[in-house]
Image (tube, rainbow over all chains, first blue to last red; front, side, top):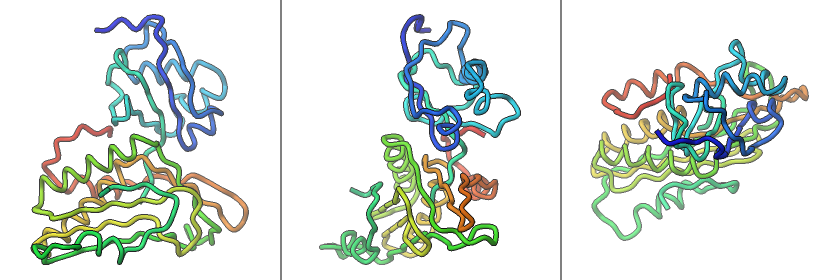
Length: 92
Length: 158
């Protein structure tokens, strides 16, 4: 386990997640209690009304990628440089 | 480049020519072109806008293409996906597959589209003629279509 305390990670947002949060990306220092992507989503939902809109349980499902690879909610965030949140994809 | 993300249009004929130039080992070429429909849920639309995740998009398309090459004997596979604002009738996506025989080319083209629909980070927003705009919801049938290609070992979110 890498100790990430004090080390910022880049969060990126796409599609309606970006619109609700009101920005495309930000650098954030994660609290030590945030271990998994699921923890991060729960923490995000506490950061203000715009984050609650996007990340609260009961909102539409949000997917995540760590360093540009799809991950599941139980993935660990410790070594992440970039974590992205977005709706299920709709290309093609 | 066998994988491209671009705002500009593509020419399927030119992409076939690019794949076949100088070779005689190809016996089957399949192309799929996806285009913008003029209506959604019975309502006319003015346009769609495609957003994507620069970097991850290309990486996912290359990963998907590599999976197809592992699975079928392909001489070539091309994926081109457009981004930005597109109006009804315009091209969105092109897949070209080439193989010695048709079955591999047909199957690989379908496989590439099924994986692209569920894995490549693109998002569509529809502008309705009424003035409303909304993000398109993902469809469960797309995940079902991908999952019928049993044997994939990729870890995917559910």
